[in-house]
Length: 351
Image: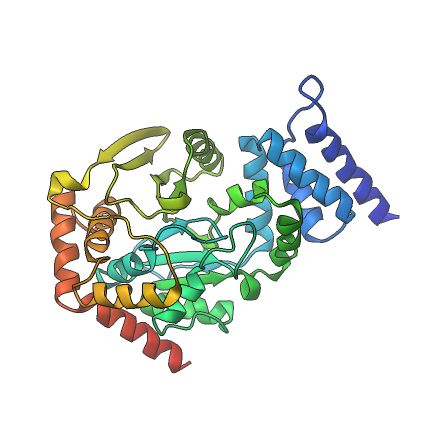
């Protein structure tokens, strides 16, 4: 009886978002939270879930609906906390379905930030529809750092010790894995993919840095995070919707403080950086280029300095961009960033 009642309630949500322009309307925050909660628990039929996802994608989720989805993830998902007096972490929000066109910089940027004492939290999963791009776990594994096989408590202990945490969905949020099948079957990113860019398992104060491609997405992200009482937010028009800043094209950054978004546009050439955004080919080539960058050479070096310098500045480790770029160069040249990778790998091997 209860299951039938739940399915009928879900059907009412489906009617709301699946109706036409004249009669369709959005769900409330509480209704959206309930809808995703029911989906994650497998209460609606597969036909209902598929119809909900495609209808929601066509009409685009409203900000209170995204907030409701985040409420569900915050309730059901893993939870990670900082230790006492630990610096507020950066939480990077990037597409879970990975990269296919451009060589990722963020794993190296993460190592650089950690070497400067700035904690970083990443989230991701296994290869996922619709892009089936290279994942965070694959990239770090290619560098000799295994991020799988850890309990959430081990992840948290590692975060306290090393200033780095990776939330791996298949192991730390297994109920969310049930959604992957639907992503494949509808052949499009569902609205849940937008919500993933805004979700973090971290409880407490942090700097949320979220990637986007289209300006309307950025606006929705900011308004949604305001509803969630997240006011320390940075948006990045990044490579493939990630938080990686282009070194070839203008870096477009939005910084939200309180309820105002300040636009920052940076051109690498104005800081004597002339380089190309490297194309993605395969993990082996990326690993070789990444290790070269950690050795202060190779085609990814400039992009690492550019991204590292900007994020050192935006996170408040340094006072301005010039100082950030100088510090990024110094961290790489001194071997500190490379040592951070070795320290993390040693920590993981000794668990």
